[in-house]
Image (cartoon, rainbow, N blue to C red; front, top):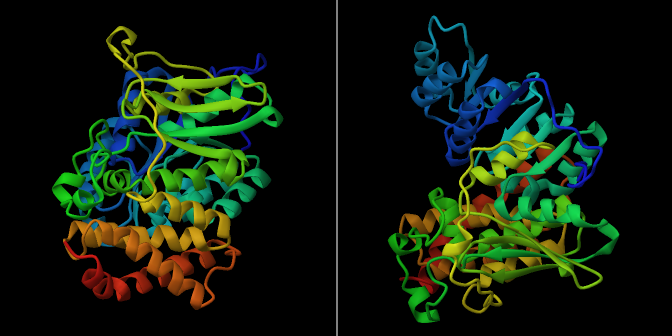
Length: 408
């Protein structure tokens, strides 16, 4: 990663007002970022904001923040956006090209928080112009991590991880040299089914899977937490962000979600980052980097009765092993994995397959893609998105078969 390690005495926090672009401004990460910006108005100016379809909310947000440009990904929502911004002086656009335009506008700092593969092209566009990119979109690194990090390095971009686990690792890496790192450890809450038997997990409903014990997130990420696929995707992300091999990346279930990540050094020392279960903490770290801003939620150490850790069970949660296998296979395997998982989660939420069908559909799609010779490393964004598109089609074709094998 092209960011300078934490703890360096030569790091100087910016003194000028930092210009900001929010890709995915109306989602959960965007909303938390807006909260921080509004509490530190003197430090930030908003250049551009984007959303997928919610033109009304985006327009209101653009007005409130004084943004210069707003773009909605859905062209059908453009008329509503343009009408809502009439008389404001805020420029507007719609469609993928407009979202990419938002990423290319002259902002110092860009938050890449667009959900899904749709975030790949605009997030890469921000990196290719050398911006500070605070990346909250897993798919960018999972679908095209090698390509993204290479292009970012060539452009002199700084990539900062927003995910709480990767942000924790980033902070803990400041305690030593990268050459002295023995391993990094990502923590997982275990989700709502941590103590469930295999039989109970197979019978799990969408309502049960959406009841995360610690975090408030969108439905897709919440289901990924329940399957532990989110942790598998984070292994792939960590590999690209920190240049660390699969076997140097461990996962432990930590149900309290207080320790977000650890780095173990060759001398046996372990450095952990701890904090409350509030995404404003890692967002604030990225937003102010290399400085800090105050006003965030605090962790009450006196109220923590205990911190526990346990190894993940890949028999009950096979998605974690599937993701590691995809990383070690390399090429486009992680792209296929991610695309198939997005389809599988959607089919589960629509009750077309059971909970265990998520892993079954992902595995079947990976096998089908391999049989068709689709696992070569994507050469560019178009190639990565083509693999993503074909993989989604393969997954959809396999749904009826999986529904029969892994039904409720």
